[in-house]
Image 1 (cartoon, rainbow, N blue to C red):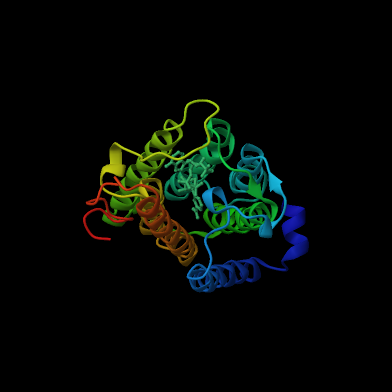
Image 2 (image 1 turned 90 degrees about the vertical axis):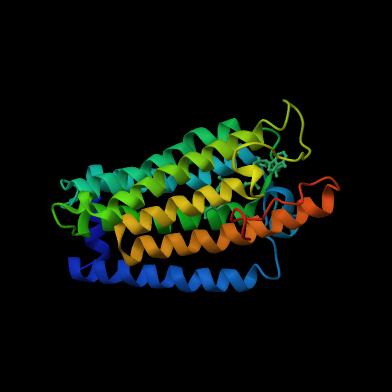
Amino acid sequence: MDALLNTLFSSEEEELYVLDCLSYLMMAMALITFVALLFEHVPYGRYASSRFGFPVNVKLAWFVQELPSFLLPSSLALWSSSSKIIHLPNQLLLLMFVCHYMQRSLIYPFLIRGGKSTPFISLVLAFVFCIYNGYLQGRYLSHYADYPADWVTHPCFIIGSCMWFLGWIINMHSDHILRNLRKPGETGYKIPRGGMFEYVSGANFFGEIVEWAGFALAGQSIHSAAFALFTLIVLSCRGMDHHKWYLAKFEDYPKSRKALIPFLL
Ligand SMILES: NC(=O)c1ccc[n+]([C@@H]2O[C@H](COP(=O)([O-])OP(=O)(O)OC[C@H]3O[C@@H](n4cnc5c(N)ncnc54)[C@H](OP(=O)(O)O)[C@@H]3O)[C@@H](O)[C@H]2O)c1
């Protein structure tokens, strides 16, 4: 991988500059996405449309599109001159990212029950994002991020790591509740009950937002903050859309349930 990186960048300063620029660009993309999502749903799942390309099997789509966010950081840490990977804070932060994407690409897709096919353009956009973000987080944490030796005992790292873990558990538990709403062969929708769904319609999204906010708090970098912001915007819009969709579809939908943030929103 070093040979490839050496052909792309003439110095470490140049690569770090590019990583910073990619982070600011991701923040700008998050704001543009927010405006776009005021007019259009994120086009997959219940909002899938043929306007966004031919349908791709949902399990294949999730596996392919998420895989770069698992493979790229792992490869960068293992097979490139990752000078910072010997430090514990870098190892732990990279582990958080890789664990999430190992579950998301290698386990989650094969548990899906009756999911709608993914439009091809939606798959391509997610695939490109996962290459972009996998390189951004993986390269920054393995080769550039500089933390004090005792960073893992800093309150920001401890609170951020706990948020990451709690958010991940909420996310996986909520996805588990959703897929168990369907018996094998079913494709329709039911009212989710239990866990964080008692409080919000977008319980899986709430978990993932908390997860990456915790990662950004523990990582204290523009790179992790950009990803947390992107996740916040995409998943809060999807959570709000799902909430409106449930209220329109089910007359007996729990009236006290919020869209995304328990008791508030
Ligand atoms: N970090 C990011 O930026 C990002 C972006 C997108 C997604 N994600 C994560 O990826 C995961 C999946 O996202 P998603 O948008 O596909 O979530 P979703 O819309 O909640 O759907 C998840 C799965 O559950 C099924 N499902 C949803 N509601 C259901 C109901 N009421 N009854 C029966 N089945 C139901 C869906 O089937 P259908 O396909 O038939 O709707 C789909 O297979 C989540 O954990 C999310 O946090 C992360």
